[in-house]
Image 1 (cartoon, rainbow, N blue to C red):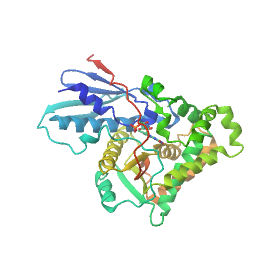
Image 2 (image 1 turned 45 degrees about the horizontal axis):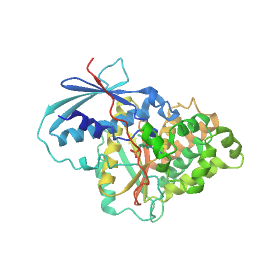
Image 3 (image 1 turned 120 degrees about the horizontal axis):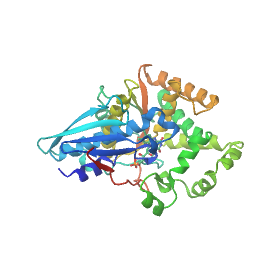
Length: 355
Ligand SMILES: Cc1cc2nc3c(=O)[nH]c(=O)nc-3n(C[C@H](O)[C@H](O)[C@H](O)COP(=O)(O)O)c2cc1C
């Protein structure tokens, strides 16, 4: 087994702001996956849920890559009751190599933040996305077309996406975290191999210049008096409306393993979109903030911000038929566009020998 190759495929998974909150311990017959809470200290990552989602995507990649190599991967989640950072232990058993339909797309999957073309989702694409997301044990996917007329569920999701971007520019912690993770040049992105290359944000030239000023919270605070954060919300709304469809993933509960399983489902959906040549943009921050408001976990937001988020959560839940027992894992947009201008890089997998 070529473990390095396997792990390189695994860590091509998405993570919040490309924090890559993982490391591996390897023994002869098993691999242990650990979360690194210090890598993602974002407000979004309440209870490590964003990171657990990313770990789910990583485990999905790992099992696809292992099956391609003729190995079956048996995954136990949170095997060490006393340690919530020990996300999984994976044991490999020999099997028959078989071509995995998603294998060629593991490293091609990427976030695309461009405006998409305003065209309807092709019916066979819609079907293939819903099929890929059809695993009730992990969660459920709902898709809402922007054509011919957006539904009230579509409008509720788009409003939540706009509110997320607005809140980032109204909350100093959310703002600081975003700007700490921006890489301002290709050189800086290559040196750190984490965070987000500014080119991946697909900003118009003027907006890119403005972003240099907007990294200073004091400047943002002043400009908010003149409507900056609302304008940013409107831009997110336009970005969301440019997609053929928006959607969400709801998971059957709020425990860490629900988030890991939901992350696996998210990754399947994203890989299917990639396989079909579609563009995909996880606007997951919106789902994370709404879910935090729903669970009363807004300790790092103002009461005004959490009130708005709670209202947005109730609207999404009502319009999209989300039960109170379910948690919101992800919101996304999907459609057609040229490929992104740049891709986020990865650090090599951090592997520690057995202990
Ligand atoms: C839980 C989670 C939430 C995310 N939320 C957002 C988001 O709100 N907006 C966004 O543009 N990207 C979001 N992303 C995408 C990451 O920024 C992206 O995966 C990362 O930068 C790596 O880039 P890649 O997906 O192109 O490999 C999220 C990813 C994860 C795993």
